[in-house]
Structures are given as structure tokens and as C-alpha cells.
Image 1: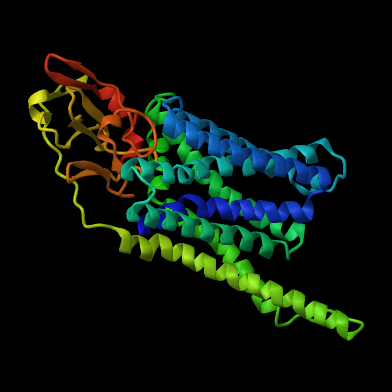
Image 2: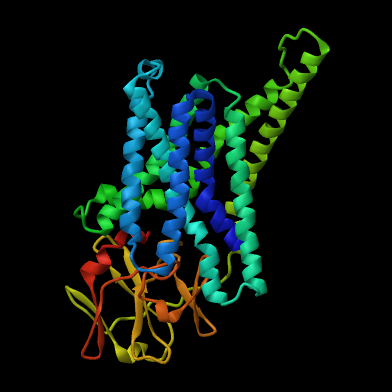
Length: 418
């Protein structure tokens, strides 16, 4: 349960914060038509996220890295356009084409945030069901409770961000919104670099590789930084609520003003609490949820030459999980796993990493292959196919009693490993 709470919170909390701020800014600064643009794109993002989750986990039609690459690119373009078109000279023009473009860009940011973050969480019930085979099991129900609690926490972050920022003027919250979107853009840029390197669209580039690895390693710190402005805004509102001196003409107006500031104080307190809960979930709760499982050591391959890594059937014919690695010239150890599929002469081959949980790896437990981060049990028969928490698919061939893994195919995923 705790592991799914952590995974859900980490996947959604920054997106919930950004969407809440965009929502709040749109409500107080946008005109009717501009609001409609943002709401339609947000709804479209929600529908697309559900569709992507379904396709990704039931078919092999989606290459997650390529899809994410397009989402990263669209997000970055929308961010740059919004930065430029939301400048004061354009913002103050009532019927400016540039102003309309600015709101379209903001709506696209809303869209990309949802499309990137939500599919992973929508897939959790399906992934866990594949492992447990029934929704009646205690383990399944507990894990889904963890997902639900994480969703509720992120919903409160969304509402707190929206309610708090709506208490400031549009000109006052716009710089804060841009700062939050900058944190998001820094992560999306790192993700785009990772995809470009992974798919060999860009030749090896040390700066891009270093930045993408740094951002991936410190993703939690970007989330913490994004929560800071919300916390500071909430504290400012909370202190201001005790010093408000709005004029009133009669006792009824006075009671109305006092009720308004009580409501502000409650949402400000909620914002501070949910920020602390989110940080605690990704630190304290994660530490509690981690197991003491140690990955099995890397085994020596049968042979490694300039082009391929060779693994003899004799090394992996026992039906257990085997881990191998290739070390690049940058000193990065790219791990992959091999396991003989039950009641079959075929083998499951994939990276010791997945698109959902990263390079935390897999281990064997009671004859099952388990993700070391989220504790999801893999269906061994589907290892080598895309989808869910399955190992990332890598190219390989079987010849002369050996599994042959091209080194170039491994190097595509160098940025996945720290």
C-alpha cells in the first residue's frame, strides 16, 4: 500500500500543483472565450491520458519514449510561447491575436501536464490486477487504497493551489505561475534530451547526457522547489488574514468579510499541510515502504566483442532471473535481464529498468520476477513485450545456442542508468 501511495504522489503531485495554479489563474484572468480554450484542452488531456493508459497496457502500439518525446517538445514550445505572449504589452490588449495565442499556449501546457503524468497512475489498477489475477485479494485492495490516498492528496494540492492563488491579483500571481512552469520546463527539457540520446536522434553529447541524468536523479528536488512558492503564498495569506482591515458599512458586511478571511485561512492552512504531507510521503513514507531486497549480482556474459554481448543458453536455462551488463566508455553500466519462460523454449530479455519506475531493477521472489520499486509482479511470459512495468524492450536475436544483444541497442538506453 505504502509503495503505491509514494508512486502515485510522486507521479502526480507536481502536475496537480501546476494544474491548480493554471486553473486559478485562468479563473481570475481569463475572459469567457479564453477560459473555454483552457477547459477544453484540459478535458482533452484527461481523455487522452485514459486512452494512452489503455493502449499502453493492452497493446504494443505505443513506444513510450517516442510519445513522451513529443509531449516534452510540445510542452517546451507552449512554455516559450506563453512566456513571450503573456508579456504586459500583449496581455493588456483586449482582442489581440497574440493574447489569444497566449491562452492557447497555456491550455496546451495544461494538456501536456495531464497527458504526461496521469497515464502512469491510471495503469496501476491494471498492472496490479495482472499480478494478483483477482480484485478480491487483500494485497490488491490495499495497493488500490494506496493509489486512492495518493489521488486524494494530489487533489487537495490542486484545490489548495487554485484557492490560494485566486486570492492574489492576476499580475501578482503571473510571475509565480511562470516560475512554476519553469521548473516543469527544466524537467521536460531533460526528458527530451534523454529521448533524443536514447533513440540516437542526436549523437552522443556529454552536456545533454549529464543534464538529463542530473534532472532524473534529482526529480524530487524539483518537486520540492515547486511546492515552496505555494507554501510561501499560503503563509502570506494566513498572516494577512489576521491583519485585514477591509471597510464595511454594517454588521452584515463585517460578518461577510470575516467569513471570507476565515475561508482563506482554512485553504492557506490546507496548502501548508498538503505540501508537508507530499514531502513526507516522498521521504519518510518511502523509506518505510522500501524493502531490504538486494539485487542479485551481475553475471559475466559468455562473450563480449565490439558489436555484441553474447549469453549462452547454458547460463540461463535454469528458469531463474539472470542479470548481465555492458559498461560504456562513459563508465555507465547498462544492465539487462534474461529469464527462460515457463513451459517454453523462448527467453524473456529486457533492460533491468522500465518506463514507469526507472532503473531500480527487478529481482526474483518465489519463482516470480518483481519490480524492486513498486513491488509489482511481472508476468514472465510477457517479458520482452512493451507495456506497464515490464522491462524496457531491447533488440536481440537467438543464434547457435546464444542470445545475442547488440551493443548499439544497449547504448540507446545509456541515459536510463545513473
